[in-house]
Image (tube, rainbow, N blue to C red; front, side, top):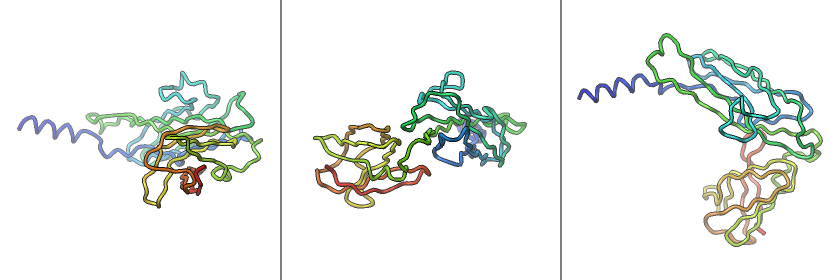
Length: 230
């Protein structure tokens, strides 16, 4: 009985209702003809938060000290009051990034709830949000909305071959056949510009079959494109 009482007290001390800081987008598109771009952070909770932000090249274990991505986030560290907001400015530094295709990086936002007089006995924990940042050179003539139509899909035995002949990254979240509620035959895959990817698939697919590619556009929305498997 005593152990049960202690457990209840501990559970009451944990901030299960902490809402945290959210980003106003699911991906960042950085135009190559601009020196900076902005995103908005909002603290949806009542407690203040300390936020640290940086960009990395793809290493999930990166830190502001170890990252060599050619971007700087301003401010790198900021305090956001409860129900408050903060604009982050991402600046591009001098670099040798390709001009004929997109490059992908990752924006990290670490949310550390601030200690207050009323949270002395509560469990504090940091929440890390990591979203893609696509650096898009202004030399690309092809519109990004045209990319899904140019992706090709074909079968080779038990392997699905996806080809991306465009200068943009293409994120395929699902490939379905047989209706809107059918399960996806693949896991999410991101194709680099001018690349080919061989992925395993589940279920049954056959050459000549019509399938639906569900991809993610610049706004983070699903785009459905009908394709015939080669």
